[in-house]
Amino acid sequence: MNTALAPAEVGAIRADFPSLEQEVNGHPLAYLDSGATSLKPRQVLDAEREFYERHNSAVHRGAHTLAALATERFEDARATVARFIGAAEDEVVWTSNATEAINLVAYGISAASARGGADAVSLRAGDEIVVTEQEHHANLIPWQELAARTGATLRFIPVDDAGELMLDRLDETITERARVVAFTHVSNVLGSISPVDRIVARAREVGAITVLDACQSVPHMAVDVASLDVDFMAFSGHKMLAPTGIGVLYGRRELLNALPPFLTGGSMITTVTMERAEYLPAPQRFEAGTQRVSQAIALAAAIDYLEAIGMHRIAAHEATLGVRLADGLAAIEGVRMLGPRADAERVGLASVDVAGIHSHDVGQFLDDRGIAARVGHHCAQPLHRRLGVTSSTRASTYIYTTEEEVDRFIEAIADSRDFFGVRP
Image 1 (cartoon, helix red, strand yellow):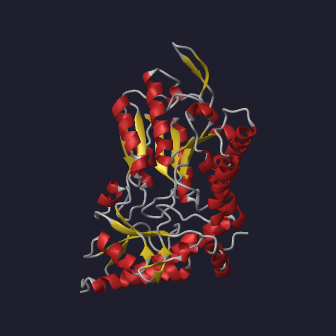
Image 2 (image 1 turned 180 degrees about the vertical axis):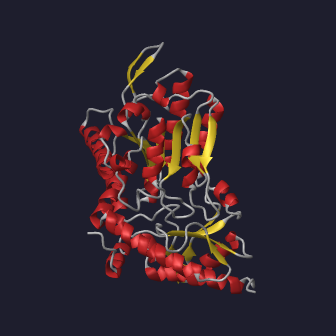
Image 3 (image 1 turned 45 degrees about the horizontal axis):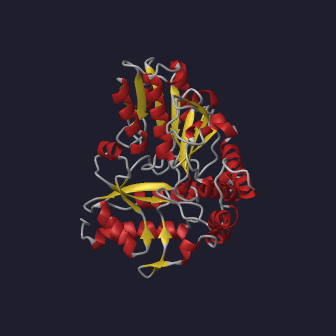
């Protein structure tokens, strides 16, 4: 069933989120910052609390009952994530967040290159790493550092004046020298959806591995790694109803096992002597130390919550809100919406530049009306620079967002020009 959520259904969902019961500056809270971090429903909070109250123990270490129960729930959570994205359980690595997951891959490639490791995950001088001009810093800076360490060259697929990827440059950017192609699934600034199939197909032609930043897609739409055919994919739990401190790296089994470990210590070894150590296969080889047990269990609860609603219905709901946002903002004089035109495919996210007003001032004006939105460069300075702005104001929706809240945002953006006296 792919129909969007009815208003009554959204109302029932909102009742699960304690944060939405409050007022801010005398107004009902309109939380339009889910692209930064989502709110948490009671069901997820309860799942984490129950673990600490009843099953708290270190995993993979004890032989007592609580340790066995904790380990079972911890690995059940991994199985839930694997099923959710269409992966095998041993292809799901727990991390603290998506940033760590991407750094894990970049560092692993760097270490493999230094050791003369498998060609599939090694770089040398003259090789190329390709990103896009849309990237969040978390999917740009690790590759800058990897290029510096290995002597590889960093290249990027440019965007046009609207921020859309210039796909006519695909073949000339992803050349036969490309070894890694890293790109975002959904832009956290523009709300645009990347043509994963075209980019992956070109990477396959030249034998490059692909790394997908799925932070803004996995929480909002059905994502299947087999269909996408990517080699690695990263996303964060806190953007999809789960707590902070839990992220996921998906990696093809053979590629994960070709990478040296990112962190070393306990829980990721088979044999240790005073001279050397031997490591477990993935995913445990990347999970040194005390694990994020309660957070992983809460992430599984968040996935159960989302699946009960239906990812296709969530995507339809947010697409409707995205169109409403784009249409409303496009009609306001002096307001420039960054990214694709109003009628283009997008998620429920939009960033704007209000002529004559700094985004921080716009954000304060919104906050005075009880509207929580993101301001700044959204960890995407190169993209903002390419579009000729230093910062923007972003509204991002989720399952609990109503049409009325979107309309409040649009009205407040329009009113901000009068308030700051910048109308012509």
